[in-house]
Image 1 (cartoon, one colour):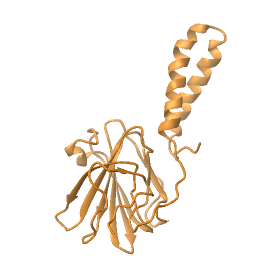
Image 2 (image 1 turned 90 degrees about the horizontal axis):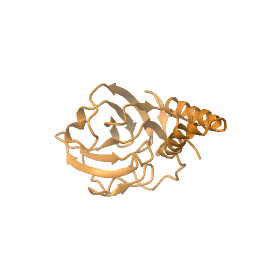
Image 3 (image 1 turned 135 degrees about the vertical axis):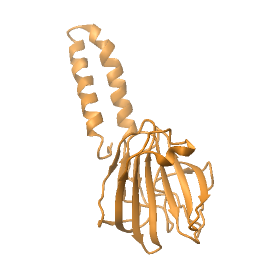
Image 4 (image 1 turned 180 degrees about the vertical axis):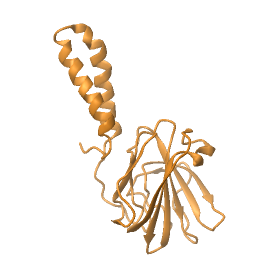
Length: 203
């Protein structure tokens, strides 16, 4: 099973502790009280941080995240914001909505409200801008109450292919995608999305 880049600071210490306590259990069965939950936590983290390969879907703009469409809002500048909520059971690796160049990657400090909270716009986040054939495309990775670390995989100036992995948000969180003026969303609130597969724009 492929694991996401950037998970080793969390996974390796937990896995090492699970192995150590399991070995100690052979000497003293009381170590099982520690080995059992640590082994379960390691297994859970392996699931949480899975990074399956994907065959890109068809469409000009594809979903950047696995999750559920939380809201679709018209923006004052004519764009449309599609907010996708990622729960802890979703794949946490985010993908490029379309091909182009990374114009900028900006880390913005902030709070850690639950990602479904309306004020989570002010949370810790990473703002991406992609130069594409459709113009500037903005994507925002937002940390939630549990996910307090965003790991970008690319830097400004990098070339990116549609559905390419661009970063990781550890555990539950939210990803906002801003559709350019004149492009309508093909998804609706409550619809599930698959990163790199689900078409976001209406053709």
